[in-house]
Image (cartoon, rainbow, N blue to C red; front, side, top):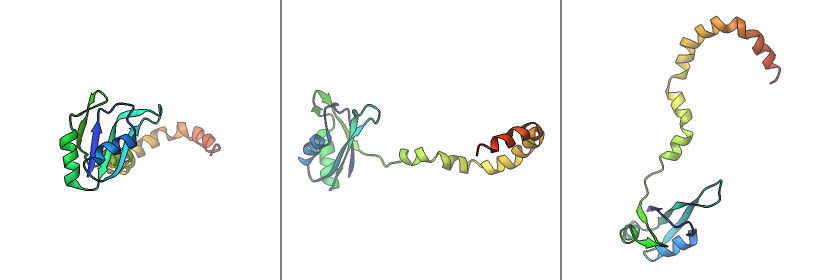
Length: 128
């Protein structure tokens, strides 16, 4: 079971989190999420527990528990949809019928503006 842990103290590290959750069962992994620009904790983490029942027990016991002066938010993690959408911008463009738009509107536009832009484009091609 994958568990989302929020409102973490910025001092908590992976190993600290793993130790806390191991009180409830076997922990496959514990990962505090780090901000790439600052190198500091973003205040949340993911813990993967081997057994769903133990994971649920950890959620029940640790949700709203105090750790380093902060009340934790502990929930079952939602499936990774955001990561798919991040790279999925291309998917939106493909699904948006870009080809049809280019055939319909682009042809007329290129015919009207083609003479003015033809010289500029031939010069810019030398850069490639």
